[in-house]
Length: 203
Image 1: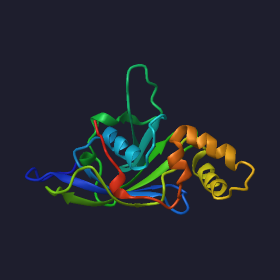
Image 2: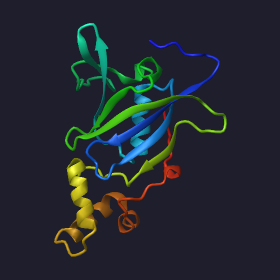
Image 3: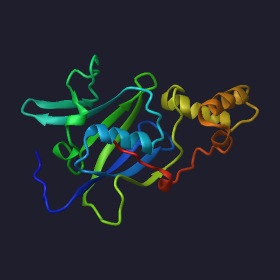
């Protein structure tokens, strides 16, 4: 466990990228160090505009006397069967007790589409009074759509939407409009992203 200076509030700067996304879909976020992994889950959901309909799991590699092991963090509730063999309740573990600069872990969302997010701790910072936390301060490329077959499915969707003559163009567009609204789909740009538009409502 790491010792923290109690005089200040601290935050982690995290780089989060969807694995295998080309071009890379990534976000840079500032997250209070005393957040738990359940709250980090909410941050990631908002940063990538996920809808929260699927299960998730954090996996953190750790070094032990016997080599490399791992801790897995997920949400426990009554009647829930944990996904990970080494799982602990994510709401009972704070980031500051497990992360340090250069720590790498992953966040797995939707075990059908398999959206894996690679997370790297880039920095450990004193929270500034003028800065709201959590915050998305940088990133690139539009968020992916849900339930489309993971990153490979999304990249295929991008190709179809860019080709009005594609045989599946109209059908795909109609399906996406039903889920995301006509305005968003009609103006879809796979390279579009504005960090300031990311809003957080962390419980």
